[in-house]
Length: 159
Image 1 (cartoon, one colour):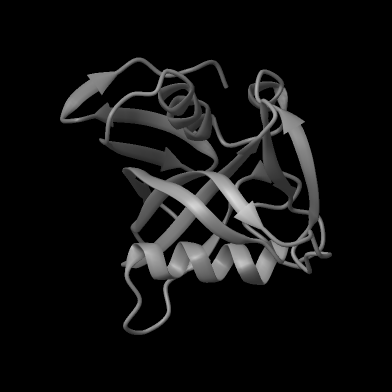
Image 2 (cartoon, rainbow, N blue to C red):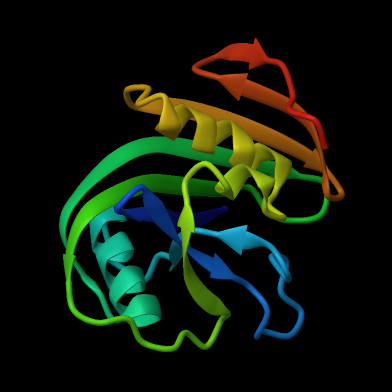
């Protein structure tokens, strides 16, 4: 199993998004995602989120919140536990990211970008300021086939 973090950094009604276009053999190729990555040994979710944001953006978070746990189940990949954060305070200047292009995107436009179907579910939960949640997303190939929010089946977004 894999532990990762994902952070949506907010400023002026926008999220800092990463358009994944630079890495070869990238499961997220051409998708727009938040900032994050895999845990290193002995890291907590907060440690990982802070490190990944600093490495990928050059920013140091000063105000952030742990918002939820997203469990990805796939017929192709190992199970992934993604620890989801939002942040609204930071210092530093943006740097070039070797994984893609960083861009501030109006939060209302984010759901219209090429993202994973499941991302639209947790982005909606974040937009509605839902308290800490557990979301299980099951994929067959690239198709979302099941979503379970806090132990209850949830309808799927259009794909």
